[in-house]
Length: 175
Image (tube, rainbow, N blue to C red):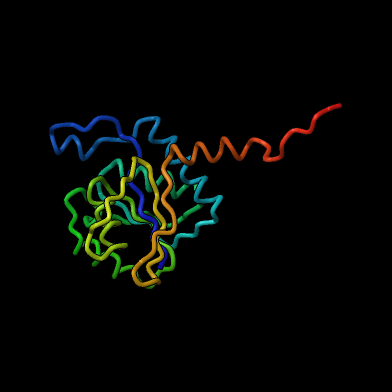
């Protein structure tokens, strides 16, 4: 399985009330991050068989926007394993549920999404990997231990697109 771990896009400032915070939606910048990251995944010709998201609104919206932009037509599935209070054992059970799939996009929250990433690639959770809002990591779970193939955040994606638009050839002098 190729696993794509994504942190939800920007949803503004957290709310103190947990019930209100669970309903916090993406802000305009977050929606733009979703479109940018989906275009980046399309550029890399990423194929996903299933998209799984935390049940919180901001993660579901991220998964839906990215899925729509990628041409994913199935329903986004929800898993409490990806919620902010999801445990690593719940996450492993979720992975086992989708073990027969080739490509899985899982959308979750800070800090557990990058803790899951660290535990996958080091087996003991020793890796401290920062995932900004909207970041996506590609992991090859077929290799042992699982191998992190890339990690891209929206800032990096914008820089890649900005530089790709410029010509890579130096300008010739006109003498």
